[in-house]
Image 1 (tube, one colour):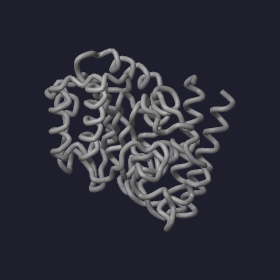
Image 2: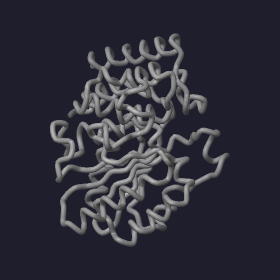
Image 3: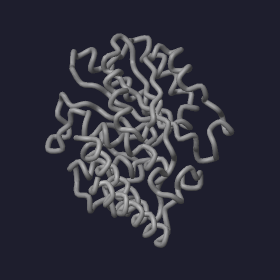
Image 4: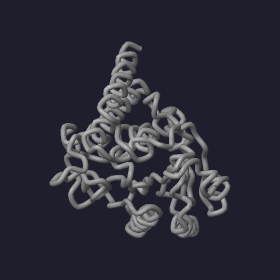
Length: 278
């Protein structure tokens, strides 16, 4: 895909995030919106996946360690063809397979159930190690939250990955600087993020997490770095794409009202029209 096409797809994914959380009357739009370009690039450009065969053995794997941003993953999977986009409106409804956190047993395209913060990287490391032991050719991608990396298990997993030289592991940190209780540097600062991962023998890059060209270059560089796992610290804006949600901690975990939803969708539809005319 060209960058324009990726941007149009990201816009659709953002609309799906808002539709899901609005209809659920709950959920986590802020971090879903900040990670949208990462989701879009991986699922529509980078990863070896097949919606018609979600469990194919040689597929690339993805672990959403910050599982509460499931609306972002679900909207991506739906737009990629793993299940109907219309099902996004059933998020968190009784009887819906689209639970509040990813469920690998019931949702096509989900490689690992997640939600308990700090645990996803360990799962991704295990998948990467399995690939090495089997001589498989797949890569494992993981998305962490910057608040999530305050969890100690993250660094146990990072230590193991660096020690075992898992160069088939590429980690993204969605560094939007906001967690549920406020700015991360005021809650329990994990900064400097890059230097910490360097200390665990990771290949480290800092990028603009909303710039597709920068994300693409970083992923290519990560795949070229042999003998060590990679981390891409993506500097993002929480609530990206919706004016009144951007950089507002209150949108970490609440759904828009009908008025807010209509305003947000109008903004995104206008952006989509402008993108199509470019």
